[in-house]
Length: 209
Image 1 (cartoon, helix red, strand yellow):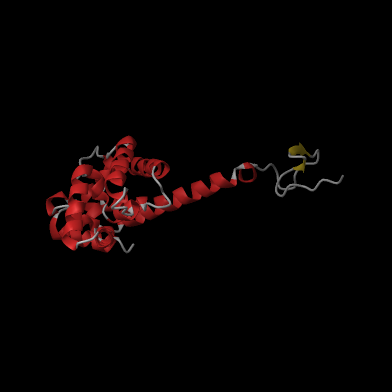
Image 2 (cartoon, rainbow, N blue to C red):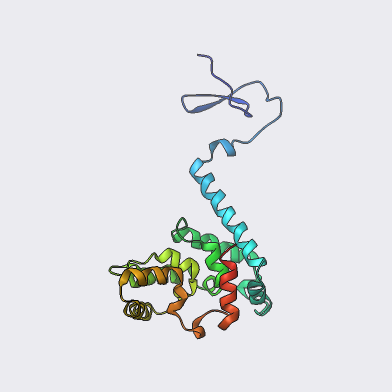
């Protein structure tokens, strides 16, 4: 059986095994890395790199984030780009990255990056149980993308505030729509990162990037 050459490699392939040709490859030795790497791994790496790039666009494009860096001490996490990227990738791997906009979350409230991975996961689970369980059944991922500061709140207090919204509007469905579109309504101005109108303006601006 005539076995076809593998493109770019000085060898032949048959039955899943690589057999090297005795003739030297005309372009010299080459690596198999791009051929042997799992397509799934390449896809994961691509999405991670894409999220890292997007995070830096958000981070460097907003005065809010730049202020976090300039006001932090010299040994702060916010002055260590490699550590920030590492934390972002870690969060991507333990949270539902297809549903959560993790670059946006980290840019909107940089305090999230100061938490350990375990603390962020635990906070996510608490918020999901507080707001995502019946009868509220809110889309917690949407809410956290718009209001990541919810991860820093007491879950029981969030649920209490959510039910106050239900009581004020009269029904669960209307309250759910309101909460998903404006999750920061569950928090007082004092709890918002960057606080007051300045923080609110930042939240409105960054959501479109």
